[in-house]
Amino acid sequence: MNQIERIEKMEENLNRAQQAVRKLEVAFSEYEEIQEAYKELNDYYGSDLWMQDFEDDEAGKLPKDLKRGVLSEDAVYDLLAENHELTLRMLKLITNALEEKMLQ
Image (cartoon, rainbow, N blue to C red; front, side, top):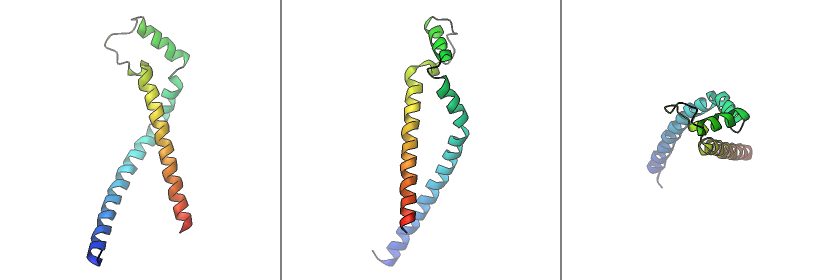
């Protein structure tokens, strides 16, 4: 790779990295802001209150037009599992970045 090609490639890397960091910053801010609501959902799922709401829904006691995705066992469980996997990915990425920085 000649000097011009190298500089062009590094410029592209810079631009892509800047865009990714900006997007991550926005997404991470949203993720931080939702943590209290996430904890509340996590505590609710599988609780006695959730079970009562689930049973009332099954018995037809709730309005038919009520959004009830939270009473779907799969929707909340899948979200909790996805969040767990995402936090593990973030932890691995951060650990690798810290280890690489320490080696320099």
